[in-house]
Image (tube, rainbow, N blue to C red; front, side, top):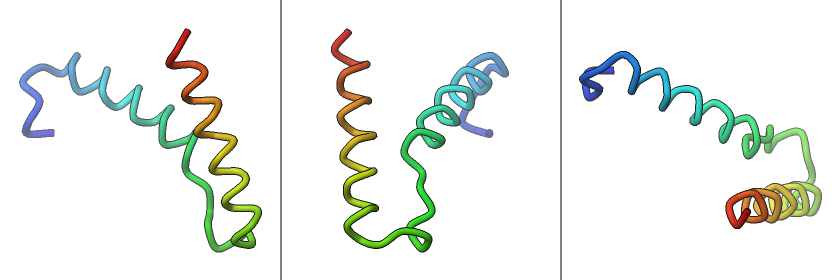
Length: 53
């Protein structure tokens, strides 16, 4: 928080960070390695598709 000079900048960063974290964060210990890699690849492909739009 100390690096942000304005509260608005902090709120904007936190909002974007939360949505990205929710998209990519998967509880690794709950999945097999194969499922984890498939889910991670699907999330990355969707993220790239959204970024190119």
